[in-house]
Picture (cartoon, rainbow, N blue to C red):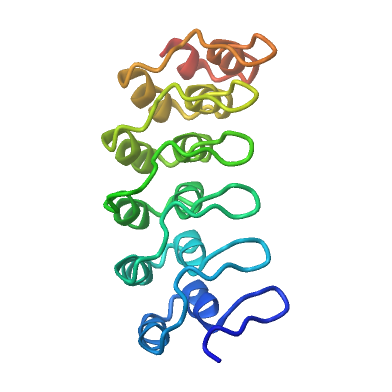
Length: 193
């Protein structure tokens, strides 16, 4: 059974996608593997391929009608995973999917743009901004992409977000602004930005 999962619910397509085995993925899809089958944590093969930056597998799964907006147990979509890990080419492929929700938040409200900003992936941030990601969308705790870029000292990302009209005075639930966080972290260049 091509769709039989192991104890965690991972099918052969999950494993091939995780490892980046394009020809195996194609063979499994041809054998009617369910492209949107979820694990017990609600991860799909597209989550795994995106997480690991396997561009050709991402493209093959998208061509087979993989659900680009499907969330796992933490609310992460494949786009979240590609952004967290800085896989620019996979991000670009996912952004080309007509139905992609570029601003979808995870269970805490973290958007793909916030994930990329927090983890220091400048080119991914630029791709998301070009795709019209909401630069000021905040989490449940009112953190924004600029908040995290400032906290982590990611100067170039902070500059890109500011150029996209990020709200420099937007505060979190405790009243801290990006300037507070950059100052507390000793990030002089971000403070000057």
